[in-house]
Image (cartoon, rainbow, N blue to C red; front, side, top):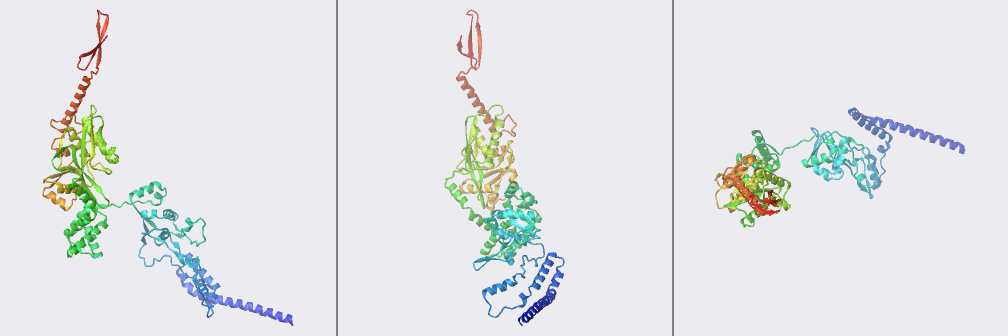
Length: 620
């Protein structure tokens, strides 16, 4: 009986197995038809994309092989935390991680990443904590800026990139390989790499625009061999543009647009004119306008505040000028302190009378957001020596290279005029009085040379005159920077200390187009309190500063007209040379020896003669 039962049981099991197989096949067939009905439209729509079609095929096969996951429900009362996690994980693999969504974009993406950290640029894999462990999955893979800008343009600031660790080298690798890797920063920092997801690199087709200054560009070009190979196109953006009709119209449009967007009062014609004048002043040129529009926007906002304070609905010139005055007042504390020291005579300045060997030069203090001009008193003393021009500031290590170059040019010009045949034989000590900071630049070369000529010729210099200008070895006056600040600084000093009504500033003739003076200084010029004299050559500046003719119009002249400064210096040098000769005579310096034969004695007498041909010693 038992064998029959066992045989029957085996048959039943075989029947059950076959039945299960038939049911499984039937389920698969029915499931395949149902899945095909859902996936077929997607496959047809994506037929051009082989990778997407292959992915949909894999999804179809997986669902068909795991139909039980979709038809078997959980038993009632099994809602445990572990069950919820399993339920979530069961369908996680069918979710789609939308990496980048450009469905609303109408053109190629243009992205500017203001915080280019490693993860913000190259993407990341987020993690969550479950039961004290870090877990992750493919839905936590997040795109970086290079993926979001793929197919378009990515704009980065080079200073921000270089500050972030591992960003610069990773960016070069991405652009070199044209693939967007998504990796953990831990792999660069950890000694022992941990297991993690390894997303497939994404092909990239984007342009990276790196913005930075000229200095950083040259440093990268010289120090990084890959930089010129990867970033092949360089484009310079000018900080100024021509002040013509077309650009003025564009400025007016910009002002109107800013007022509309910022909800400001609109600007009338006089206000626009004041803004354009300020724009030209920012670049220091009457024929140019600044392209730093953020500064223009700021002054419009400040002028709007002034107008609203005065309960005006239109921004006028007076509002713009008042806004500029307040802007400068907020940052000119150092200038006000210096002016207080000038008024109290702590800083010694002379703007009246005449003085020998003292000239009012003009310098500029640049504080970054504000610059202003100040009188610098340049003095010179002379002595009989062969030291030439002695720069006290250079000896004190307070002189920059450009200033030293100006001193050498000054010395070359002076020796070319006065020391062609013999050494000059004098020394002139030059100094910027009450200057305790580093001095650089060559804009005071003309002032320094005026002080030297004044000291040598003993010609007093008018103290109501200030001058600025670089100099070359031929005596030409060259243009300088900060011309507006220098003139305004001299005017403010004359206004504070002056008792007269006539003050002069000598400037290079090339700087005429750079004159964009403030309102108060322009008014002082209009009423004759201040006059500006543009000059082309040094002798013009010298004659204006002293009232005495210089004596030469070229370094190649060797004869100087009577009564001129150079003629006075030549006489002085000749006198000094004659005194040297007399000093040599007094010391009985021998010039030549003569042997006089005496026949009777059979011997000779040796007479030594001085320069006056008088014998002063005799020997046998």
